[in-house]
Image (cartoon, rainbow, N blue to C red; front, side):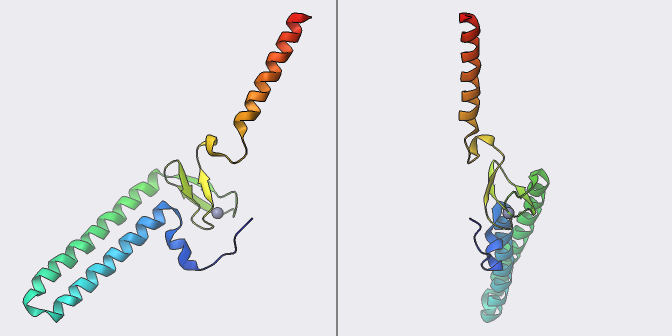
Length: 133
Ligand SMILES: [Zn+2]
């Protein structure tokens, strides 16, 4: 059942929040690299510098956004690995073990719907019996 923990890099993409954060991290690196490329082309230095600044500012905005999302997200303890994680939206991955968690009971692996329908059937049976009796 439980997959062996592979690379720690795996957690960079576990869950929507971590994915967005990794994207923002790459954006910062991209911006810095872009600014350094500006040193190779002195005539275009301002252009590369402004572009890099835009990327870095964009990643700051993305970090800010993930902070807001993180506040809104649902905090749960993962039933698989037991660690606290956050759900973004209805269905999300655990940040630690990447098992898919859902806040919606309809997504549960064991069908609770059939159970409820069975209980309803038994209720109706008992009712009909009582009517017959
Ligand atoms: Zn987990």
